[in-house]
Amino acid sequence: MLELIDITKMYRGGKLAVDGVTMSLGPGLVGLLGPNGAGKSSLMRIAATVTRPTSGRLLFEGADAVAAPDALRRNLGYLPQDFGVYPNLTAREFLAYLAAAKGLSARSARARIDELLEMVALTGAAKRPLGKYSGGMLRRVGIAQALLADPKVIIVDEPTAGLDPQERARFRNVLADLAADRVVMLSTHIVSDIESVASRIAIVTGGRLLRHGTPDQLLQLPQGQVWELLVAPAEADAVRARHVVSRMIRTADGVRMRVLAAGPPGPQAVPAKPDLEDAYLGLLHAHSSPATGVAGMAAGMPGGAR
Ligand SMILES: Nc1ncnc2c1ncn2[C@@H]1O[C@H](COP(=O)(O)OP(=O)(O)OP(=O)(O)O)[C@@H](O)[C@H]1O
Image 1 (tube, rainbow, N blue to C red):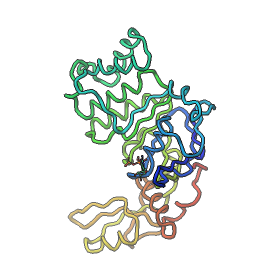
Image 2: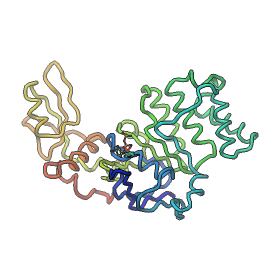
Image 3: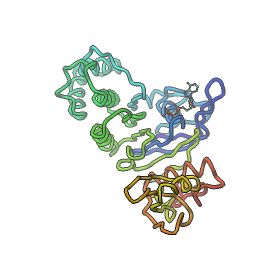
Image 4: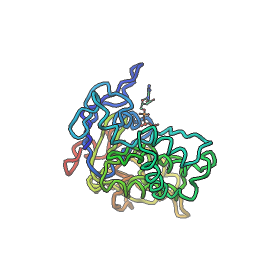
């Protein structure tokens, strides 16, 4: 439904924020995962037709959405990272104002706003001024405004930043429901934000798309290369210097470490079942240090995902 073809974005001053990204998105939730500064917001602004790419093509239902963005814009809900509200308006007034700006009639706007407030669990708070809302409630207003025109494509930029775990979970569930028959693109630098809800995950760093695949395909990458071991506190630094450590916990018995390595990182190491955090860290490491990267992770990906 939405295709990005060899997209690049070079800002004034020469910063290459997006470097040849190609991805094709159909219904489902795609999680754009990458560290700060990876180019996620730039890519999302391009997909939302807010910024023009320096080169490359953006197609919506096969038609050029850079030269003629209106068809995509009519079908788009976008929640930018720096979403602002009018603090003196209530949620209902704010949504009514935006609905009018989008050209919805007052009557259909009223019905739609009721439906959306219910969906994001804000019906009870709809008459309170937005200035009195928590961060999580404001994000939910942000999602409601993105859904006003019942879009086919929903783009949300780091929507869970600053939310508590309960709000994060609620937000994830709302987006997962929406993704049943829509394209939902969500960016984050936190693996757990998307691991339970994304049908596909795109890993980006330095403006490049490292991998785009299903969670199962990504999980294949560190297969056989994840280990757990318990070391004395004095040995932990040496292990960290040699290997990618995806987790470590200090316990009464020593330091329990989870390590990515082609072979056992120590005599007591036992193999562990890879998770997405392992796959993500392994890919980032293989990209930044291809010579020492975890075996096979810089090369092709099983399942043909890219
Ligand atoms: N308008 C701009 N002008 C110049 N450079 C920019 C501009 N916007 C972003 N950049 C730079 O482009 C790179 C990618 O930024 P971007 O915001 O797209 O990344 P991100 O992955 O969304 O990061 P974050 O999670 O920190 O928002 C960064 O180095 C950033 O400083």
